[in-house]
Image (cartoon, rainbow, N blue to C red; front, side, top):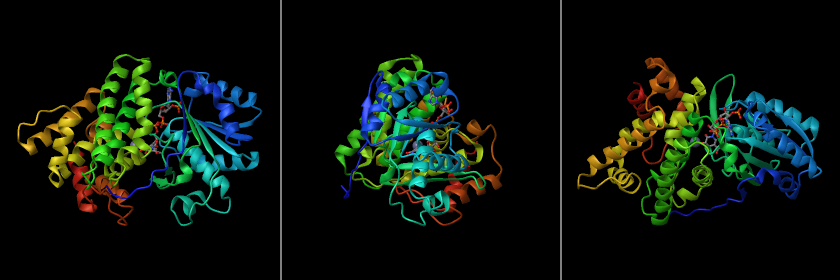
Length: 395
Ligand code: NZQ
Ligand code: ZN
């Protein structure tokens, strides 16, 4: 087990009706002036936003709102939010939504606490160390990105379509309110995107060079089996509280660090997917489903035993003594599951057409930050590898 630190301080408040506690929770973390961030329309239509604002007011807090966060959130709205946070004098950010809303709130929290730094050029590109941020709280409405307890946030710069993440312990929300009933209004496509993203946050830790962590591996495999089962159930029975509870809790555990403790992070499939969502505005989870099988086939020979174990422990496949065949069957089982829940397993299935070579080159250059980095740790991938994987997925 490689040395690690585990710091996951987010207070989880889980269960029906818990959003009624949001005012008291925010006050208990020192909030006075709260900027409430939300997305398109879902939180307005469901009445959740009104309930949240009422709870904040009942606790004596002053509120301002910032709506209109898009999936794959853009820097421009963060800049707008920063102006609002500063003129309002916000001392707390409350995100009501999913990963896109939470990440927007995290970025505003970073920028508002550091008015002398530019949120993109200085903070996001890590030219200046992030040494403080305003506190963030969350009312979660979709089990997916895990941002409600992760240390990361992901933004896209509007002009250049660069999609970049930033990790910082300041990005761990103070609290996350999780009422599975709030997810019942989700369209099935978003439920499926969430299932894939939750699985991938664990798989991008599981496929790594260290394979001697028994407890971490067993936690990862148990979480994956639960998500696969509960995901099917949630889609077959919309409004199933038990299934959505499992997904919601798994979403947080999958990305708070627990499922990879003592391992190295890989996250190459995430980087491959980010380029697709930045260029084509595709849903994050769907980009991961579109890329994973091609990544896996390309990397299979790096450690076939790992894929074989994944097949037995996660997919219940029988080990008949042919490791490579078992590994390939595990990859196929994963892709079949993605297809069965309406997720794409190729570039054309997500974007609508096969892409020309120039676009694959553009995606590859974006992925390497224009030649400045490699990605992954399970197998370290450079330009030629990444281009080959995009080619494999280009059907
Ligand atoms: O905008 P509204 O109207 O709310 O609709 C949203 C949005 O269209 C809808 N939705 C959310 N809750 C709903 C609902 N619709 C009906 N009922 C509800 N209860 O779902 C759509 C997707 O929302 P979004 O917030 O984009 O989803 P998700 O949680 O998947 O977040 C994706 C973003 O998070 C980033 C992704 O890259 C992407 O930008 N990630 C953030 C991470 C992190 N901070 O740790 C890690 C992830 O790997 C990921 O990269
Ligand atoms: Zn993700």
